[in-house]
Length: 232
Image (tube, rainbow, N blue to C red; front, side, top):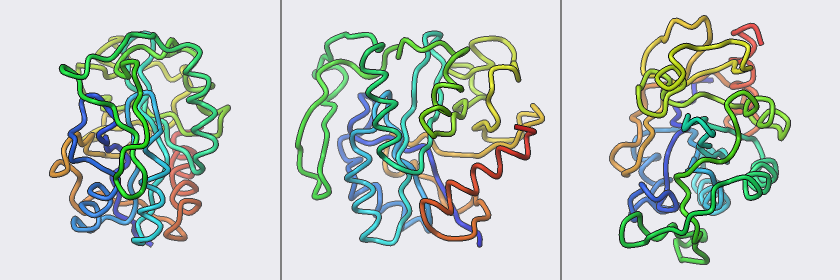
């Protein structure tokens, strides 16, 4: 079946995310736009994923747990998972390596953790848009080791894109799927996401994957199948 998706959406937990991008607002906007599957992918954390997943379950929207990891080289890597527990283990690893710089709320925002009723239940005090301390040479194997799919984010952009930062795409780094607005001609399959920081930026029902079931397992299996088309 065709499932329309957007796997790169920031919540209010991202310092660059809008305060209105709460779990309920994200899920409802995705439904309004006709999407079947999304991922909440904040910078170096997945702490708003459980709430979004719970809201999605009630509303019939598949929500994958995810994060947008920043490598030591300032390259953004979208990390998608089937289960939150796997993402949680990756985040625990990052807690030991991520740069610790105190967030300035007046500049970057509150970095709030919300529950499924959009109520604040916590706040991350250290700034999230910093290096994770993980090199691009090691990140693919690390994410795969925790059961995830590592995807170089907005690979066609100069800022924070793998090609823009390194000057070339090295297949030996272990990536099997990339994110791009159009075919980057790397001999790899690609997905197109919004990288939404505001609710209105969430994708329309334009990009789709073929999946056997409309479920987290079905969506993740479809993405894994895409990876094999790149020779991974």
